[in-house]
Image (cartoon, rainbow, N blue to C red):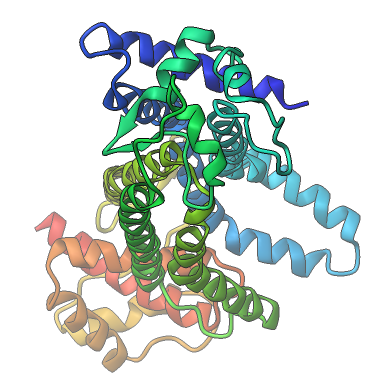
Length: 413
């Protein structure tokens, strides 16, 4: 029924066994183990770009949160219109929520396929899904992409003394298929000695994979500007559920994988160890790449705002046409700095104007910062002002006008 999965898995294994067989003994256990390892490499390389796209999509989803919340508030009583607007927003931002699940979902049938292919090398068992063949029949029956000679080579191969398709809970009556004469040259202890250490290492790596991912998410969340009153009960509940899922990934999943080791073949343990190790290394490298991209985007935004900012005393233009003066542009130079700063707030948004003391405080705040920190603060306030949930916008806009005025004076001097 799942031959469309089993055959491709066996063909990739067949290819890498042939490739490594050119430089190593084709019948050696290490050759077959390397075939499984490079099955992982092949699949993970194919999934690398979707995985990077998944992270970029997640970053865009975070940027979309303010607009998504606004859509939910606007269409709270019209679920159809809300869903339509959400799809429009996702299309505009180039986000596909389903695509983010692809890398994880694809690996599930691969794991099932490899489990079945490895089990099918030895079909002497009489349990669920077993064919109950004799030793002679199982050693002379092709296994998907493998011919009889390769089936016998796989059955006779040993990795640290254990057959690659053996597993801890295997019935000892099935051991005879791993030898052309039916003689048994290994014990259950050999299988345990190979499988358990690999699964313990894989579980530990899985644990640190999840911890590393959680630490990055916490750091990113801490870097986001805090928005008072923006969180809703639904958001709080979602964050609580997410925290529970993360704890499951950190502790429960590694433990479950370790407990299931008694059912896993030696070859499947090789697959799991390779896959978790690849995930750990890939996660570190890809996260570094994502962090660099985010920093470059922030720097580009700051540079663009700095380039487009009007010079002191000049009106900003749009397509060559002068626009109405901003709070920054109308600040005039007078003899007294306090008297000079106070009128600057007069052109700020609606509400009582800033006092001379308030303006002086904001200017002192700006003077205590370096240019990069000031740019970052201005960018942060601008981002807050784009969020519909931000409170006290008028005050923030007045503060922003004073900070921009100070920055322009420093750049013009």
